[in-house]
Structures are given as C-alpha cells and as structure tokens.
Length: 480
Image (tube, rainbow, N blue to C red; front, side):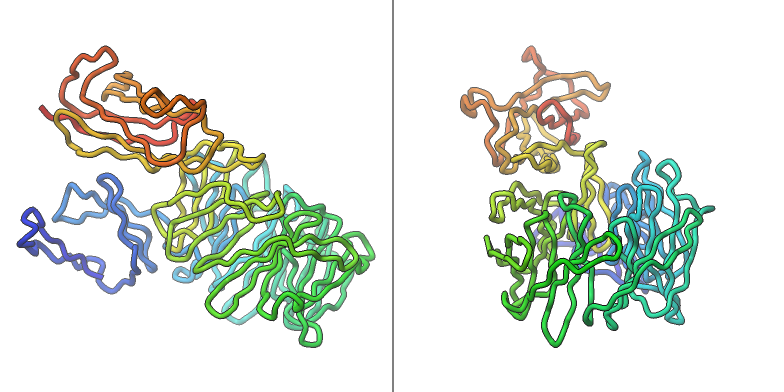
C-alpha cells in the first residue's frame, strides 16, 4: 500500500522519483486507483476514498476524503436513502440523496455486516440489525417531509428472527432456519402488534418483486422435505395459502426467485461456474410455462422498478434488460468507470447512481423511453485528442444502442461560458437518417468559431447534449 511514482517522460528509461508511504498499514484492491481529468481517486477498505491532484505529482497531497469508509457491499437503496453497514467502523450509515450535495450520517453503532431495509409505508422505514452479542433488533424510523426523523424511532429487540420484509400493509418477521413467519402491524408510535404466525419450511425467504406486481399476494421460498418449494400467501387476514409449486423441476441449482409481474417470474441459479436465469409465465394454480433462459458468466441480475439491471463482476459494464416480449431483451448498456454491482435511477432529477465495492457514484443523465422502459443515457464516453492541441483536436463520444435518440450536439464554450461553436448530429456527413445511429461518433474542431474565425489560445469547454439536454462536459486547452 505504497505509491511508487515514476517519471516516464523517457519511456525507454523510466526513473523512480519517489516512494510515498503515507498510506502504510492500509489495505487496497485492484482497480483501487482511478484517474479522472486531473483527479486521482484512491479507494481503501479502512479509510475514505482519497482525492488527490495529478498536477501535484510527484507529491501526493490528499485534498478531500469522500465515501465514509469505503465498501458498499451490504446495502439497500430505498430512494432517496442508501442504507449500508460499514464493517470497518462498526456502524450503520445512511446517505440521503434528496439533497443537491448528498448527506451521509451514522444511524447507529453496529458490528453487523448486512443490512435488510424496507419501506413499510411512505412514512416509515426500517432495517434489521444485530449487535456484538448476537442480539437482533428491528430499527424503525419515521419519515418526516422526506427526511429521516431521528427523534421518532424505535429499536425493538427480537428473538430468533433473522430477517424482516414488507407483507402487504404489514411487516413480516422471518426466522429463516426455523421456517417461522410472524406478521405484525406497526402502530403510530412505532411499536408492533402481533397479528398472525405461520410455519413454512427451512431457509424461508419472501420473494423480491417489481412495482408491476400487486400487493395482494406474497411469494415465499423455503425448503420442505429436501425440496425447494414456493408457497403463495394472501396478504389479507387470515393470510390463506393460495398456491404452491416446486422449483426443483427446473433444476436442483435454482437458488432465488424474483416476481417480475403478476404472471411473470424469474428463477436464478448456479450450475458449477455458470449462472443462469429462467423466465417463466405463472398462472395459478401451479401452471408454469418456461418462456426464455439466459446464461450469465461472472455476473448477476438485480431488480429495479420495471427493468432488470445486469452487472458483470469485476467490471463496470451494466446492461438494462426487459422481459416484456416474453424473452430477455437488452434495452441498452453502459460502461461505468469502476467495478459496479448495481445501478439505480432518479427519474425526477435526471440522476443515475451506481454502487461499487468501494463507492457510490452519481451521474447526470437523460432518460429515454425504449419500448416504454425508462433507461439512462449517460455521456461519460466523451474525450478529445490531442489535449492540449494546436491547431485541431478530435472530439469523440459514444452512443449506446438506443434507437430513440434523435439528435446530439457538441457545443464549444469559452472560459466565460459564451458559446463558440456547435456541431450537430446527425448531419450530412453521418447520413440523412432522422435518428442518430449507435456507436462511436467524432468531430474535428480546428479552433475556429461559428463564423470560421480563429479563436485565441486558452481553456475551452466542450459539452455533449443529447436531445437538448446536457449529459457530459470536458475541458481542453488550445495552444498557439
């Protein structure tokens, strides 16, 4: 965990300039160093993400620290709150993204390494924690005008329950190993009233579902007589059993079930080193038809609203997947800068958040409709070469496979914010299509303005605008 700094101005004879040991004693991982413009970001498990300036090399001075001790492995994102456990500080933290500048604060001390969070109503949020003595608690907070109210909270000790989940208008306390589910009602003072308890099988879990699903039923997976069984319950008292079926008929390696809509389910499993998904149509009672299957190498699917987010392990590649046409269909993709495990959307504020092992990144974006699904267009594929330049530079950007994008512009601004020149796509050089084709696009700026007059040397900014909205900008330097 030392920095070895070399002068590579002569590539045939690199010179060791300095060894910086200010981070001695820490731990790091591959891809822990990111260079973005002149900013160096260094991710560490036992410290915040350190921001340094590349212009100051060979000196390494920490300008700022962000991220609140690094790893976002065990977390839940319930917009606008990211709730996560931090093993290194033994605390449960929350980041509130409803502010222009996201605010992070500690909810409570906890050595627990996982978080199970959920909205009970729009006004109550809860999560499940465990202390050093294996005592389990249900931690409830009220939401006051969009903010977590620390004065209205309740930490409820529990016995053998390991998990909590929403159960219609109630909550369910789940003892996975014992197969017990206790349904409770939450009072205004955040105390619990027992309503009902029933037994399933061992290793029971309430199935995740999208917002396309009704709240009238809950799917529960459990192991009964060595068989992986799905049991469906009504969320209305007395919570009758509606249907049940076995997952083993689709392979003994099925490990998780997801509910996509009222009649669509997703089965996920592992077969040795390969992950696979099965898309199926479900109609009660016990009528299941396989529609499509998909093999995943080194990755996984996650649910988000009405889109599946597919990530690849050890990669920043994210794909947005639909199932509406009764098959898995990629709506679009994006390559983010760091290892990315999940991706969340804030439609109202044109933001996309990615969760990695060491940090959460916020991106400005534009959302486009692809077959009635809203997915982000993120203009981070924007660069110019050479930089600095004289007399011209090539500006490049990437458009993913979205057929609905009609236009894009590269707009050049001077340091005063005045518009210098505009390049519009598509244009005659790219074809006469009414829509912008996917792939790499580039233009050459020769240092002239809109009237083809040569501009003075100095710093200029170039901005990518997609369908009239700015999605990314970079700076360049014209030398004469």
